Length: 243
Image 1 (tube, rainbow, N blue to C red):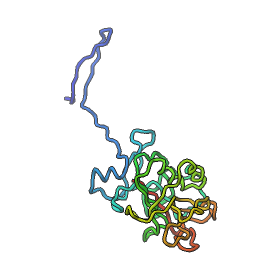
Image 2 (image 1 turned 180 degrees about the vertical axis):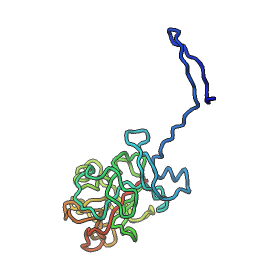
Image 3 (image 1 turned 135 degrees about the vertical axis):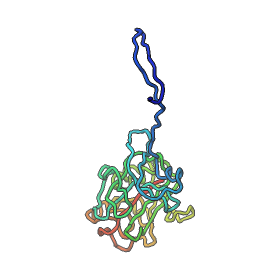
Image 4 (image 1 turned 60 degrees about the vertical axis):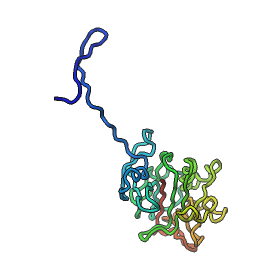
């Protein structure tokens, strides 16, 4: 027997029709972030999960890589900058609309949907198979500030949008009392279109430490190497995480 209720319905003209009331169907929705997954399952491991940052909004759910271990975990990878790709990106639209689903030697991509589900950010540059040389952090950001950091991955988008939202400050360490850099720049003169990325030379070397090339040698591949005059040479990649 079919589960639920069965019977006959009657319309305004006394015409009849069968009906069946079945059990309630539970619609399963994807979590909005890796942080939600970790909150609901503290045993969750790093890997690829389906998330939907805008919930029932226009953006579809997608597969994202979650870092559940580093810096208290719950980080969603939204930006990947390949070591083999040249710089010179002007607009977000020039990126593949979704990032790679790995933090190791990834293809280039940048999530372009809503960031309203997130508050914290972590950008890593000069990454290779041994790790990343420089990481920038900030927490408790507004959505517009996270948008601004994403815009820094494109030199024209950055310059145009910072007129309304200044570049957020950053820390060079995860801890709240880490050294803070105004606008995530070692010096205001780094705020230009020569390179792309949020952090500009905050690494202890203070040389060639940023995500990728902009107007300066746009054919150079990957991220810089965070040492004197060591620009992108196709060996290092960059990552952008939010939580």
